[in-house]
Amino acid sequence: MLAILVRTLISFYEIPSASLVSELTDHYDQRTSILSFRFFFGWWGGLTMGILAFAVFLQPDATHPIGVLNVAGYRHYALTASLVMAGAILASALGTHSAIPHLRRPPDRRGHDLRRTIRDFRDTLGNRSFLVLFWSAAFGAMGTGLTAALNVYFATYFWELTSSQISLLVLMGYPAAVLAFMLAAPLSQSLGKKRAGILASLGALTLGPLPIVLRLVGLFPENGSPALVPALLVNNLALIMLFITSSILTASMLADVVEDSELTTGRRSEGLLFAANSLVQKAVSGVGIFASTLLLKAVAFPRGARPGAVDPAVIHALGTTYVPVMLGIYLVSIAFLFAYRISRTTHEANLRRLAERTG
Image (cartoon, rainbow, N blue to C red; front, side, top):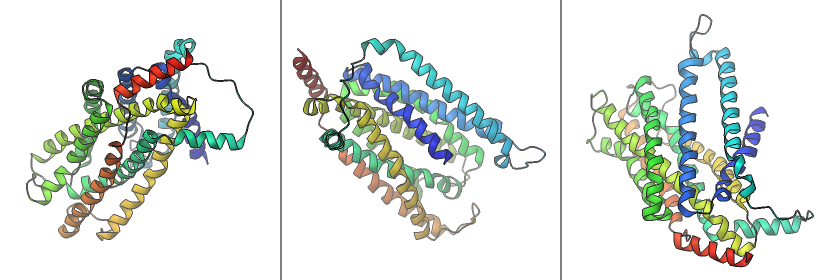
């Protein structure tokens, strides 16, 4: 119950905060720049707290020889994380406070009418470009859940990496976030969000399974080779960079749906659009996690397995089964993006038509 309460309260802040980008500016490229900052700080903050958890708080002591079982460490970590979250929220609120006078005034509140509310929801969420992003996010969340659940298996059993080597792969998120921050806005300006988002997604989709495919055909460094970890680090850096870049661009694409929807509905519905998109990602990611258990069962992966002691045939089956499943899910996600129809020209035309309406 407490976890549900915490997630609900986080949503109360996260959804208005994410949708605020559509209010702060209607400029096509500035929205991408603002979201680049959001994703940059999100990744750096998340990575830093994850590292602090294991490097500082969950350390072994006299009564807890295994650090991850140190109950006191979790209490200290929870307190620190809560303070960091509260500080970040207050900093964001104070930093955007001066923009309040320039935000659009909401319409006068109408009486509650369930039928009208349902109709408004249907009209807003029925926007074609929103539905494209919605289903793309749904399949993307499935793929993310599947990949996240199986990453530890590939790192531990497929590549036979040590904990320190796995930590190095995670640390690639820091420079990757910086590179994505620098890359997203220029790509949006030169290619447009849709094309840039598709290219970044396809690039990430290519790099993700590439080391596994190369290993399966005997063209990747063997486990224990001095070249293995550097090769994985370079791949992981590029992969995370492209993944974050794609995430920034698709979030910016969602922000542009606001005006497109307003033209047909007469209402600005930033909160509803971002809330629905967030909901599907959180709800559907569990499907990918469930799929990972089915995949492990399908290849007969042994319980309690030790690195280096798993039958090579099972390891090979894990790779040959995972790659096509993962590619299939992500390809469907990317395919939906091709139907997105809001370009720079379309967005600017939408702004002009809305300006004409208001006189």
